[in-house]
Image (tube, rainbow, N blue to C red; front, side, top):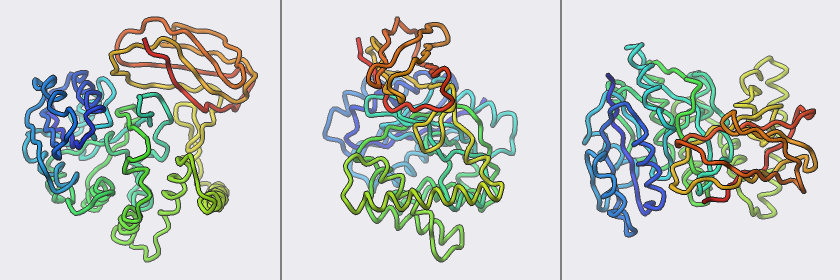
Length: 374
């Protein structure tokens, strides 16, 4: 049986850390866990004390940064497959079993990656990770289509390329995927949900620091051999789209980048390259909250409080919708000023499944998702 070596880097994220640790309690496959804390001043030690039975190695004190902590953590725990999980992210129940099965059935496989969801700080659904696609080495130098917490690497392949680069702050994951690709490592995409990624102001993903764009440019120059990197435009557009309050210049830039994105989609369509880009993800269009017919939301829930009432923001705001929980609790709801509300019965287990359709409307929008908690 394959064993995982998992590292959780943390610094003052102890309010999120229980979800990451609880998600590991819901894995049946064996793993060794290193928790690498940068010297948190919050209630970190209280949290890890409650999960001491699943922590193999624990370190807390000043370090050389996140990448260096991850690199050191991987040295401290044994395992055939290596991965890391940020303190504010978490796994789907049974994710490790699905990944281990692929590695066990194909000894020549080096990297397995899968689907992920974006969630709010409270853990409510925002979107599916949009750039996901089947592996293509050339595309990897233009787009980081592999979601980091949903990616797992055979240790022998990880060691062969020298592991994670501790000098990088923003793109250490993308850089690692590119080095693995250049080394001839075999990648496989599995269309399974493996991880949840929190999105909120202050995360590295939404950090518009120019050091981040500098590291992005470095990827294209070093691995794509392109002297004029262009992928930063897509990253910048996504960053701006996630920003609620934009300056006048940012609004102008977003309009320009939206037009360029539209031109790119039309160009790809004319060349017959748009099939992968246009493939819906569980019913959702990529990069937009637009649903093609029926959408299905899968999400883990590790909060001790249960759902009491479900709230959805939809468009059109005056239509009827059918909402089903776990394929059992099925109701037809009429939107009132763009909102749907549904009482939630007691749900067992940490996995949530919600299916939504707007009958007679081939395209509609899901603009918000939240719950009252019991």
